[in-house]
Image 1 (cartoon, rainbow, N blue to C red):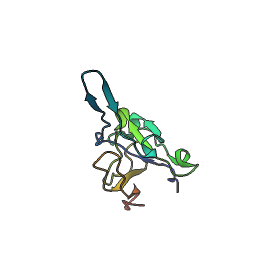
Image 2 (image 1 turned 90 degrees about the vertical axis):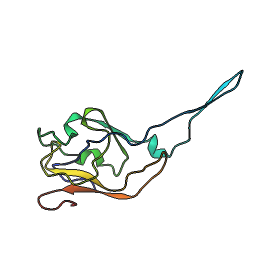
Image 3 (image 1 turned 90 degrees about the horizontal axis):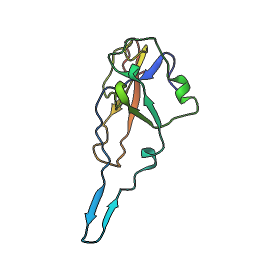
Image 4 (image 1 turned 135 degrees about the horizontal axis):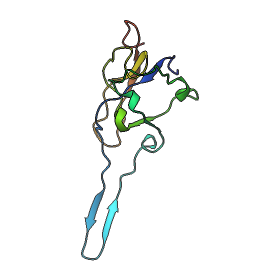
Length: 128
């Protein structure tokens, strides 16, 4: 279900995962291989928005239209942060009233998936 207005996801953490290439060299050739990753590593919506930073107090904005066609994978980049927050955020941060965060364990290795919930801090409820 898309978030209600004004609700949006917040970011403010460094990337945990990085993609690496393995190179094997011989006297005549060099072979570079890249691991095959899950589809969500290629099919996602990029959010590069500095107003999503936990310290941002700007105009209240909503993510409702971002998810109007259903769930989607999100990749945070840029000055707003590179990872969704993993603990409750006070309301009225990240340029929104209901701040979004991820309740669950983040993947710790390349091409792994974990399960969790996206929560919204709203009034006295930290996981609405």
